[in-house]
Length: 76
Image 1 (cartoon, rainbow, N blue to C red):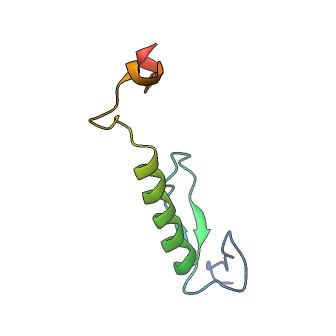
Image 2: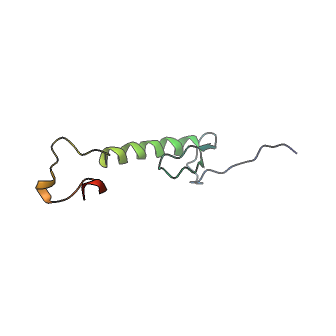
């Protein structure tokens, strides 16, 4: 009996391509997920889009005076 196990991509659909490996968590959960190469690349692209859309720091032209909102919990 070998120690190798066969993992299925977490997306598990006909579009899966490439080797399936446990991939590091990019969402902050700390839990790795098995993903094929194609879905790993798509997940990284999605993470880039999310980080661009929801940056950690406010844009240079952002002001809480504009709409009366805070950027982070520390602003309350």
